[in-house]
Length: 88
Length: 222
Image (cartoon, rainbow over all chains, first blue to last red; front, side):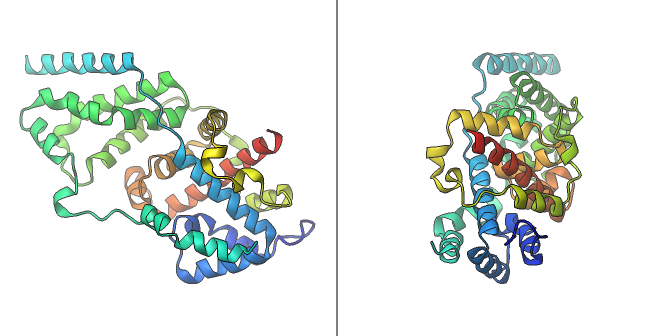
């Protein structure tokens, strides 16, 4: 990805495929070293890695969606009826 | 900036390693729900609402993140608990209860009407995605990717993320939601969806790339 007017460097493509595994800590030390060395000299791959890391961090940091109170109550009522009818 | 040293520091950060490490399971806490389920199956059906209370928040989150719609999320929670109610006595602890629960929820969700998806992106190869990134990449790491999460992730961005995730093709979306939002491991996700761990990794990578591209487009115009 050194020159946007040319096809990507094969190293870029190879490492591009492995970025998620790297972010998840599922890459072997040799691959980690390769990714870090390559990203240090290839600005596009470095940007790709940083933006992907941040995307994952966003997903992991989304707040819970609060369960609406009235839904919780309705759910309780539905199962109270079901339990009653099963035991009766 | 020394990117190599910075990435190495990030990778070796003990806090991050602790978060990424697969949870060790001791025999006695392999399934914290076992006592409750055994009690319900042993005749204590009136304890079933306790199981509902324990997991309604998790299932609601899962449903909302899959559909980005409160009504659909409620339907998913109710239908999933209904299925659990009917078949809990057949549950044999061959997996953790929560994995079994997510398996039912994912099946319910994927059966529901298909939402509009990013259809023409479903078949993009990684080569296509790499080329697209190369052509659209900014000249330097954008500000949104350099700042601490709590400074960037406001309610507006959270909405954008949820909306974008809900538009991903379902087979990618479900993996992203389980792995990056519900924080299941790769193995657990594979078990829930009945696919290989290699397939989970491929789908997850593609889902993240699609989401990242959409966010980049949004952030560039924000």
